[in-house]
Image 1 (spheres, rainbow, N blue to C red):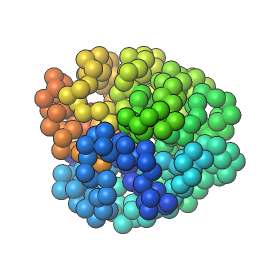
Image 2: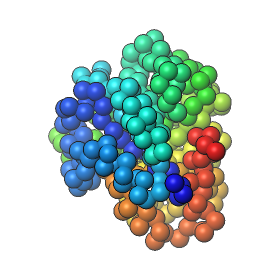
Image 3: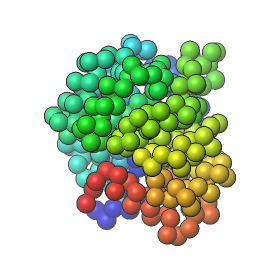
Length: 281
């Protein structure tokens, strides 16, 4: 395949979540107006292959908060089935302590996954809380990147009380401590981070181990400062991502094409930065 792009941020429901969609996720699908939540694995693979893309796939384990367990083995199986298309990241419930640390090691050493993913709002945790530092120590030790959710979330959006989810855990400044205390850890701040997008830009500008992915936000709505920094000072640490199936790669790329990015920056965002970060040949 003549690889044209790597979508660094796509979701795949696994385990209990593959059989029962949480109410907050249904809110998110309604929020985005998407009808593709139930897309099958074969169809997903063909979608990306036909567009000469690879996609990072992951789930989010928030069993402690929602009672539904994800399964990293399902992610590994999808990668094994379509190794030319999918790159797998693992997930752990941060509240599981030692068991979570063991699962991180298993994800990388046994399942062959290439990174880890947290969604602090749905997992109900402050990433700067030192109780969770053993997780980051382990991820840094095994040498893979970690994705943290940034900004607001569509999960629970428009429901009374947002189904109890608290946006404060998505504040980008909360990963500043993590980036400072673990300089060897590669951190991806997922999404432009609205309404704290300038805060995320500041963290990434200051901490050279922090990347930003542009998923979860239609490009036509990107704040001007996000476009400016992605096009200039942060051009080597900004990544293409959709949040599929919430947003499709076709829509994202069409709107990205209409933004004033420099010709030399576009391939960095779409492919080159991700290849370097993921250590792909």
